[in-house]
Amino acid sequence: MATSSPATPQYLRPTSVKPKAELARRLGADEVLDMGDEDAVAAAEGSVDYVLSTIPTAFDMNPYLGLLRAGGALHSVGMLETVHHGGIDFGVLTMKHLTVGSSLIGNIAETQEVLEFSAEHGISAEVQVIAVQQINEAFDRMVAGEVRFRYVIDNASLRDDRAATTS
Image (cartoon, rainbow, N blue to C red):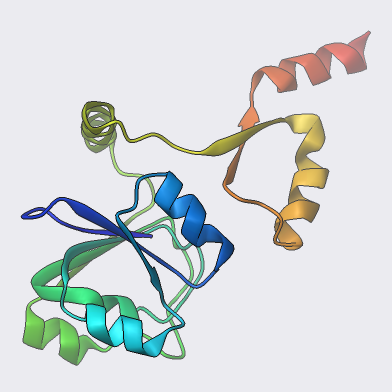
């Protein structure tokens, strides 16, 4: 999850996982906001223009909406679950004229725009590339909470796996 304000290009990294704080700073966050610290969250209320959420499961968006200035936007990428208990307070959306957007991945033109923006600003992804043969181990590590970033399966390992089974 990242937040920013275009007028002053600073990047705030909200997290509820303490070990991610130093990593977020190393990756370029100007500030890290501990979402479990109610005083810090209250102090940051209304301080950002944009929140990008990559949280893949349902979560209470209200604290993140509270970070937005009037006219701000929260955009969720990849969350496919229905927001339920503790869901969005649409009164806040209405009164502050907020925008909440979502997409699975975006279309080709949007993806190209994001890639160009990222290249121009030195933004890159932190991923762990694995062979398809490692998928069970990767799943077990994910369930155990031992994954720092997203896994990417190397498609070439599919070809290697097929060649090994047909020889």
